[in-house]
Image (cartoon, rainbow, N blue to C red; front, side, top):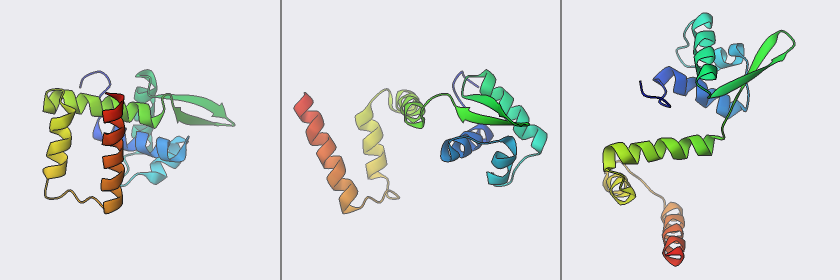
Amino acid sequence: MKEGQLSKRERQIMDVVYSLGNATATRILESLEDPPSRSSVRTFLTILEKRGHLRHKKVGKAYVYEPTRPRRAVGKSALQRVIDVFFGGSLEKAVTAHLLDPKTELSKEELRRLSKIVSEAKKKG
């Protein structure tokens, strides 16, 4: 696995921590669908911490984990990797693929917001 990429289980754990803001291993275990063992969760937390995704502080007897980077920054970085790998770095190709997918359903409000974002981007040049 390349640096910065997360396994499915690591992503699930990060989703829980991001959703809660911070969490103990027990809280994470309770929040996962089809959870692994408690020791596996602790191992994943250690790995995520060593790789720089999480940090912890001791509160009483428990370790409380929190993300080291804002979710938006991590999401932006992950999206850029997808665009680079699967769409040759072309945002246009990525957006086109998504919008032309028959499964994609956008509300009128979402389309209005997207149109506004495109218009604002045009003004920036």
